[in-house]
Length: 364
Ligand SMILES: NC(=O)c1ccc[n+]([C@@H]2O[C@H](COP(=O)([O-])OP(=O)(O)OC[C@H]3O[C@@H](n4cnc5c(N)ncnc54)[C@H](OP(=O)(O)O)[C@@H]3O)[C@@H](O)[C@H]2O)c1
Image 1: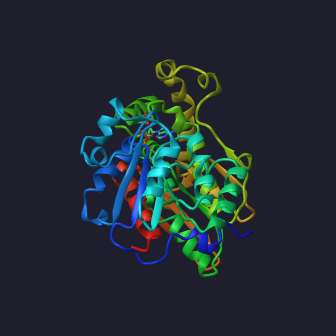
Image 2: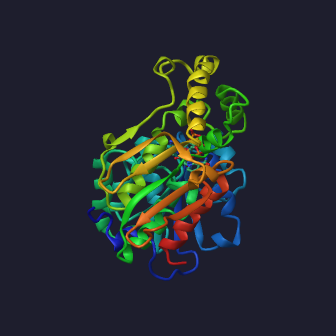
Image 3: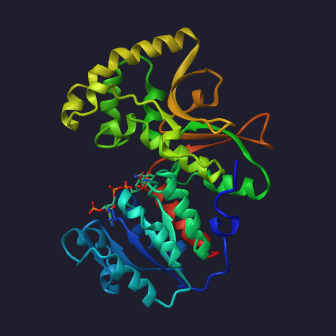
């Protein structure tokens, strides 16, 4: 293991705050960004001032428009064309002590700009994990940009704000080291395998999960394991394992024949998942276990995400709903792991993770 983000720069804790001394621009006014905007009307956000907001095509920096409750809807119809420079200028024009860019998008392109914003002295708080869970070069760019003294808050990138990244940082600060990490990092895959008992075909369950909004519109985004791999990379890197993307072995649950189809065609042919999944379930039962889609990192830095059979007394066997679980074995949590478990998705808890990081970097 080697040290990653320096404690001073990676840690969002800092100096005391003065009223209205935090100015922010919000990039992304979708499900999470919308929940964040609602949270700005609560007393917890009294110190925060929104000076800009944007979706992928339009943005707004006019104080009156930003204060309107219909901002998110209005941005769909009107506003200035998208331009980062104008948003950063709005931050610069504020007299705030802390200037924060909040990324509530899923844009891989946008997150490549996090290092340059940090290097320019803006703090970045993000729900977008495409940088921390992307290429190793991107992660290294992030680390070196933190030399500017700006801070990076990524609590919302894993477990929708469950205290996983913060716990890893705290353990490291105390001289503890992560030995192994294991868990269920996807709400949709958690739900699917917590429910799957053979009483209905796997494809029917998948359809239900989609209707309930637990999966992406194209469920292959969940079933591919790529999102889980990005979360495992993010956590491993925070713990000091400098892993490259191709060092995570990813078992996709999408058969090759279904990978290139349109979403509609995939959904029509999802029954192709049923027989192989039923066979895996029968095999797991014969061994007295259950199926779980687990992310695993071992002491040598070997990382894998995929479907495994776990015994009935395994912590992941006792999960319910869409809960996430993170089991951390460290030099001091050695005999039994430190287990962090709870809702790992949802707009409100994710928006709260963004808010918490913003407040923490300003020492509120
Ligand atoms: N939903 C959850 O429960 C949850 C939980 C944990 C983490 N997350 C993460 O949170 C992020 C947002 O998720 P979401 O569910 O809110 O997604 P979403 O509803 O699809 O919203 C994404 C937003 O980002 C905007 N956007 C895209 N590119 C942009 C750009 N270049 N500049 C400014 N805005 C841009 C989109 O604009 P348009 O409307 O114009 O397309 C949209 O407003 C994702 O990274 C996701 O993985 C979500």
